[in-house]
Image 1 (cartoon, one colour):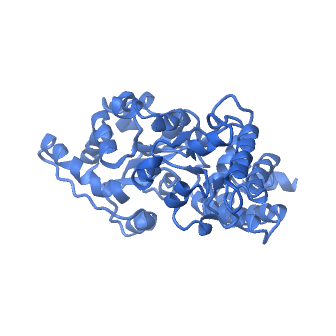
Image 2 (cartoon, helix red, strand yellow; image 1 turned 60 degrees about the horizontal axis):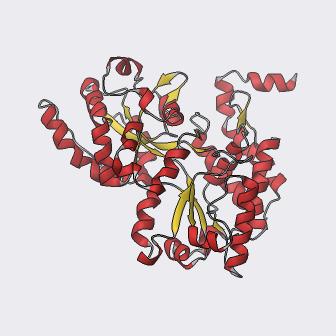
Image 3 (spheres, helix red, strand yellow; image 1 turned 180 degrees about the vertical axis):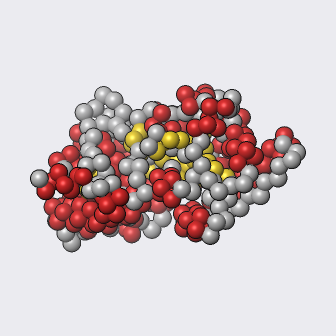
Length: 396
């Protein structure tokens, strides 16, 4: 998908030289169409032998029977070692104790910030606790002046409120992932913190619609903080003025209590094998090749995608970059979203009701009640298939 699809073709000639009897055809498709295209390909029985998938898609594809279980392949390989992967990322590929994908590159979200503006507000570095970070955001906002903000929080992204909830150790679903749990005390605390960023004027209530150009507005000091992922390492390096290249930095998410790194999302893309492939042995050989440490290094050179293999992070190419260090630290403390097929629909609802609460078309209580109601309806089929034991307990 995306830039990986364009660049992956460069990795194939060496594989074909090593395996003279195998030919590989690479098809590149945009991320925006990838999820639907994979589902359509499965229904039409034209799935690729090997394909890239966002790791949050794997539960849905596994439930359809589209994925080949990989445990037997893993037992026989000398190339892929689970201990060389970040535990939280590897875990996203395991569904009901079965391995369905191998991490290809990793992704999580950290703080990107203007270090010079933070220093001007009286902070040498980004704080490690929620309380101190909130104080720093207020200080940055005060120093920035009227019409400017401490932080950019896009309203159409579900990731930020979910990260805050995971930091509170909130369980997003309950009763065996049968029902929404968004009215729980821990999620409500995190949601209040999220809404407070807008209520206190630290983040623009218009979200990304108030930003003409993300990179230009960051350079102009319209906002100083942004929670985002590794794809923006290259974008910030390319798009920010040369005079500001020493003035921005990254940091792991702060934690509720402080003194440690806070939780962030376990993201990234995996390589999977189609259950209907007629070339499974050859397809697995391609996965082994693409996941080899040396090829992971080359993928990073080509795309900037952060390697899934931890040993690659020790190479000077990554180890010498202080901005990447924040991602390495963060990847030690990530959590996955619920591994159920319905998660993509649920994530969309979180974004929808979070935006309603920010824009004050609904109160926080109304938004969370409605969110739980919609999520319960989304999970209705799941309850039916599982026997709805959770509902029976509630009725009793």
